[in-house]
Length: 194
Image (cartoon, rainbow, N blue to C red; front, side, top):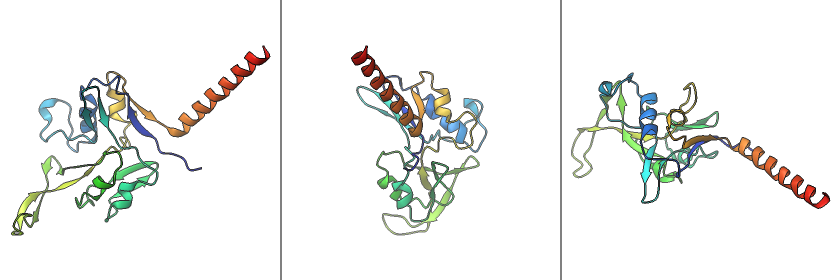
């Protein structure tokens, strides 16, 4: 049996929609150091986003699928899996949106590409007329990377004031469920014998 990848999941009953997860994600992934709101010179673009319904609010995040449809769909190999994390190389991404269509969880987004605090632009033909070239904003795929290399794990989990987010490790979850099942069997045997 193959090992399942860990991912972040939200409890919609605890989430209050405060967006601390989004801001934490942005700060951790910003290529320009951010310590105060006044230092933010680019739009806040997190790698997760909140979905609001009439009943609940919760973030949508990548599930880091084992055989990731987004990675399989990427024509240039910009999406790879390493050590159980599906990662997007935004330098390689061509902005074709195939990964967005392939993701079964809606966790992949196309976002403006910023480098060193500046929005990257590229010469392209205009879609409407085919004229050009004109300078246009570059958009690339973006998704949760479980804060690769960040001490303390995902910033959204570490900073959620309601502890609505947690890292789910399927192998640990399976062991817990097996233990609970064994204890239930033991309890039923005690009731029959006892």
